Length: 366
Ligand SMILES: Nc1ncnc2c1ncn2[C@@H]1O[C@H](COP(=O)(O)OP(=O)(O)OP(=O)(O)O)[C@@H](O)[C@H]1O
Ligand SMILES: [Mg+2]
Image (cartoon, rainbow, N blue to C red; front, top):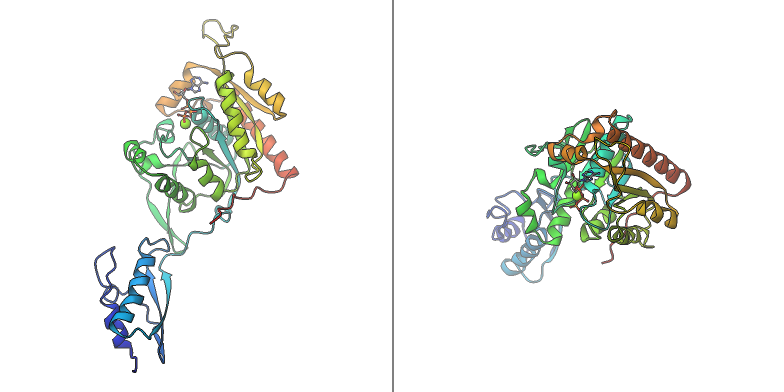
C-alpha cells in the first residue's frame, strides 16, 4: 500500500472539531507539515488556544480516523500547535511584579477586604505602583469597594496572547471575578472552575510593573488559597484578626497554613482590626468591644510584628460601601492608621527580602 496526502486528508475530514462543528480539514486546523515516509505519517493540528478543551479528543479522533479509513498499519505521530502563545508556567508568572502580599485571616468578616483595599490605597499614596487582585471568587468585594461595579475589562493582544487589561481606579490596577460574572453565577461553580478563573486573573492579565501586588483572599483555608500558592510566589502574608478569641483561634489556622513546611510563606505580621471603638463626640474614650489587644498578644506570642491597629469607625464601613476607601484621606485618623500600616508592611517586606530567599510556589504532585 502506498500512502499519499489526499488519502490522509480525506480520513481527517471525517473528524469534527466540537467547538464549531466543522471538520478539521475545512477548519484549516491541519497544518501544512504533513510528512509521509513509508507507513509513517506525521503532521500537526493547530488550535486557537494552548488550553483548548478539545485538544486531546481531537488528536485521538484524528488517529482513529486514519486507522479506520486508511489502514491500521499506519504509524501516526500528531503534534499540536496553537495560534496563541501559552501562559507562562506557574512560578514564572508576573516577573514584573516585585512583591506579592496576601491579606488573609482564618475567620470571615474580620476586615480582610477592608484592610486589603486600604493597604493598596495607602501603598499607592506612599508612591508605590500597586495592583489589587480580588481572589475571593465566591464573594468578591473589590468592585464595590472601589465603585467600579460596572467596569467590564477588555482584552488586549500582548506577545501573541490575549490578556485581560486590569481596571484602574485611584491609580491602582484592579481585577476581580465580579467584573465578569454575577456573584450568583460564581457560587454555582465547582472548585476547578473557580481555580481556573483565578489562574486567568493572575496569569492571563496584563498586570503592569508593580511594586506591590496585594491579594484579597477568601475566608478560611480553602482550595483558592492552594491555587494562589501553586501559581504565585507570595512574598509574605498579612494576617488580619479582630481581638476576639474566636477570631484569634482562626487567625492561628491561617498562619499555620502559610507556615506549613510545604508552603513556607513568611508572615509579615498581624493587623488588629476593629481594635476599639471611639465615638466621635468622646474622642478620648476607647471602647474595647471585642476585647483589648488580643491580636497584639498573639503577635507577641508568635514573635511576629503587629503591623497596625485599626479602630472601628463608621467612615471605614461607609468608605467600603460607597467606593472611597478611607485611606484616600491621609489627614483623617483612619487614613493615618492605614498609612502607618502600609509603612510597616513596606519595612517588613524589605527586611524579609534582605534576610530570606524568594518564596517558591507550592508544587502540584500528579
Ligand atoms: N475598622 C472597621 N470599622 C468599621 N467597619 C469595618 C471595619 N473593618 C471592616 N468593617 C466593615 O465590616 C464588614 C466586613 O469587612 P470586610 O468585608 O472587609 O471583611 P472580610 O474579612 O473581607 O469578609 P469576608 O470574609 O466575607 O471576605 C464590612 O461591612 C466592612 O465595611
Ligand atoms: Mg472579603
